[in-house]
Image 1: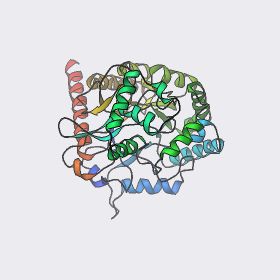
Image 2: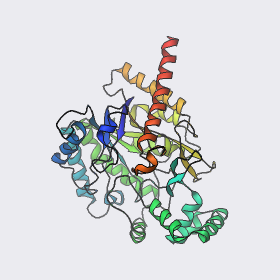
Image 3: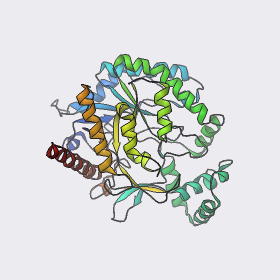
Length: 404
């Protein structure tokens, strides 16, 4: 695997000189300051590349901008409203500008409105570390008693509603603020912060967009942009839903194996690919991650490796982001499947045989507890995760060589 690291640009609490020491060769970044649907200009792309590859004194860092995460798909495109057609044209132009800069892997997602969702961005773990958490009862309390979404009670079982009602009665104002801020945090690095009124307005805009319609809109988007990406040599890779089940009555269309197959089959191009996120998909007990690598391996262009601990087996259960070797995801089996896929690619002569992988998220430990980095993206926690993942790779490669 090609080891890469997510960096949110100059505002990131973790600097490029620190990243140079963790043992990666590439950077995953985006132009978060440019509004969704707008063109990424060539000069802004070049500026970010320079921020990654050069120190202020002009000396080389040894790092390159390897993966874009994310080039956002606007809400207009997802709903096919407003300026969606011009936003698709702008997306193609941004891809052209990225290809001109030598960047060929572009991650995106098609989650409506909220992107990834958690109820606590810095929950306490048993070790004294902090982690991100999705609590099904807390989310129901937010949806029913804070957002007060129409029809929200019908989305929850009587047991969950009863527990949410009791928990909400015990919330103080600080508890409510943490919950609201956590749920509405949205895409990491994004400049836009949603208010409750904005959420209600966006929910209303999705009133007529069910899963069938949203999937059609995604296929329409891909039908437009994939030929451009293919011509440019760019590999688009869609991130799965996080968490991989419906929230607030909104559809989710990239949550399961069948979801992914339908989208890949609809636009059968190597440029239409996947980001395999083990943490997102691992929040469902019915996700066969090894099977997904075996089935979709030739279309997996980017890897997010992290682990989760589910607190139940039903769809929509609570979970927290565990240490990378201490969760429900079989990380050893998953990495073995990835290495087998890379071997197949190498033997087939594919130039892209080495799949970029970043250690996704990480628990806040040690110095992370006071640094105040982007939630989910601590320095020490991710460094620990990277070391563990590299250890698995080294052990599996050693075992393979020993068997030859």
